[in-house]
Image 1 (cartoon, rainbow, N blue to C red):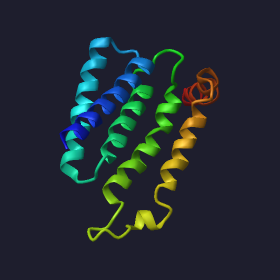
Image 2 (image 1 turned 60 degrees about the vertical axis):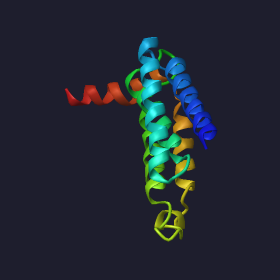
Image 3 (image 1 turned 90 degrees about the vertical axis):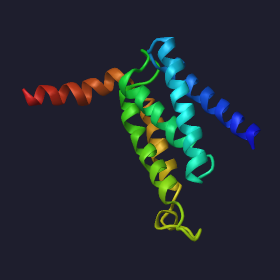
Image 4 (image 1 turned 90 degrees about the horizontal axis):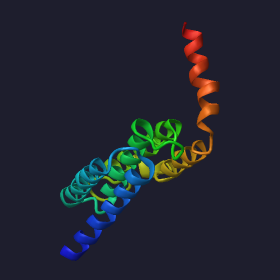
Length: 149
């Protein structure tokens, strides 16, 4: 009912704002606007797709990935984490869109380890967050740039 939708919206807003304010370097006004946009999009997707609360995973995960890639707060999250977090986001989209056949039976995705793939790529992203940014830049990014010159 209405109370459930309100709680869902509040939880989505909390996750979104926590991500933006805690790990991003945007101004507070942008954090608030993005939080509102993600919350509206999440609640709208949940109400119109008949997929239950799955939309919260899609929207908030993409927000975390974008925060790491485009506007990370110094020392809180690295671009490597943002890049590796794209994989669980993609798996989440596949899972959201294709978890079941129209008759409710498991889809090809769920018959082939299903949610395991999300957890697998999520854990890779978590491990990547432990890699110091300077080390990653020195070993991979700067080395490739020097090789291109």
